[in-house]
Image (cartoon, rainbow, N blue to C red; front, side, top):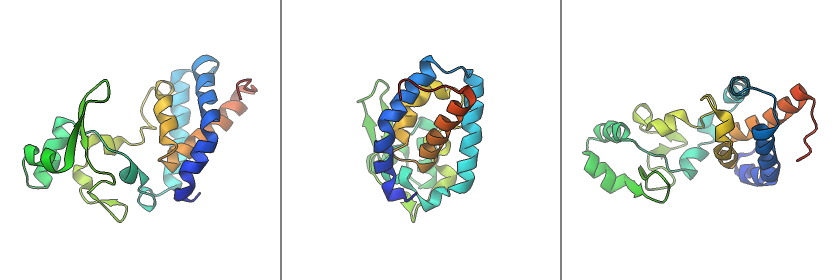
Length: 176
């Protein structure tokens, strides 16, 4: 897959992904734990095949959230105060249910040649992205569908997960 084609491919699969989400929520026989383990297994496969620094789309498209400890760590790295960091690189976003500090600019000002120039001190939001190894996948499917537009790993995980669940359950999805 060419990374510049990802958004088009994700758009083509979006309706199917929403139907799959509905299936997972209401019809799938996998337990939460079984689903999380399956997602993690598939994710590990694609993480070994796709080098994030060959893509860098997350840094080009997203605005990570920075908690207080992230701000302090990054400010220390850049040899500035948290106030200076906020003035130069962050914005306070109140548009969501949970107001937060986030990167102001896209692409990220700390990305160079698809690599993070502050990698050791990057925000927790960046460290965990795209959150495929965290528990509760079924409760996070809306976010995962959104991430299919940004992350080729998530896109591939969703595609293989649809196949795996169909094979495991031997069910035809009447919503597909």
